[in-house]
Length: 450
Image (cartoon, rainbow, N blue to C red; front, side, top):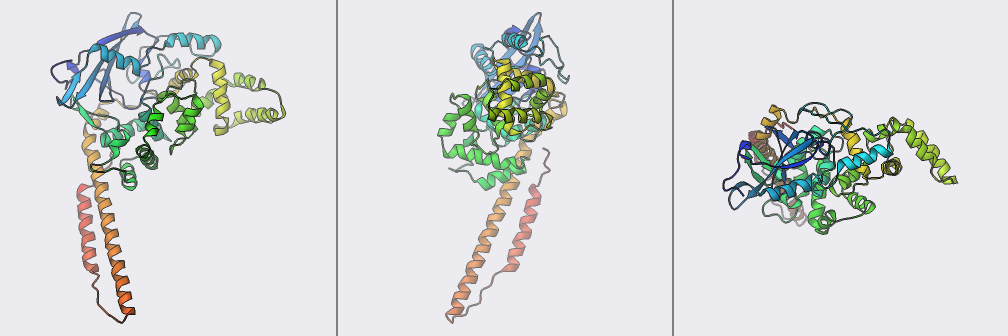
């Protein structure tokens, strides 16, 4: 480990993992809708991971793809980011990138069983170039199940850029500060316990949801706050999320959480829980079924066992091909079709096709976006402070109204017993206080840049 902290990208010392050029392509796989917090700054991909930061850089060397890697560990005792040994860094990176799996072997298999599967060929892409329809170097990452769960709850009705911004915002607002490199701050992805405020033993759901809405999460705020609360109430959920389960048990478990429908459950199971036989069904996959694989799908339907029930089922499955949107009831059939078509790691095969449909020219790593990243921490704090002040005001108003109701009830009781007493409700003072609170609120109002 280095004896001095790392605070500049130029100070990072990289070790190298060599692999084949068709095994991985960072520019594609880190932006193709699996992980949402990766940044490319000074040709270095970086993202917080557990208690540190993974730093990656890719370069071609003849027929080899060289993955330069380093892991910067946050050392609270030494106050800074310190580089771990090359061996430990390789262990972390190989695990995260799933390098034990041979993508070229899988690709060879898929090409044999599926004549329409994209053929391998090398594509060297610049950062903002759109990837061709080959899906070169795309593999399923080995991600943290908790972050994957929350990320895909956020993904509902969102595009990749927006999901990335919100996941980043969540880290800035509730994650632990890890350090800065060239003035770019890094925060961990928050665990359930990180959403507790100082001195709290349980979540204030109303306040947390209000904060998340203020930060731009919209209706997803309720899903996130309730999911966090479920994990805090029952510690066994955390253990089960990180344990090995079969496909159906895993999906059934994930569907317990608010905001997790069939597609989100499939995505989390595949990308966060290691269920590599699952094929998440979305608009893109449905378009593959309706277009590229229509005849294969029809042939598969015709081979379903013959009986009275299946006769109606077959007719409905064929009719559904004309529907613009995919029906949730079709998910098990489409998933089974691709599982039988590709056989080996169908979830990985789907990721290759999906990456070809994703527009990677979304500007997430533009210079302006990086500058916005540097400013976000202070802005997030202001937004949370505004929510807290508003919550304090609501609480004060509720207390005051309760006091007034009590005084009215006391007056009525005393009048009934023949005792009359004048009570000053001090409504003028109440209006003055409301005016003062409005002034205070204006002081902390900050335009939401997200």
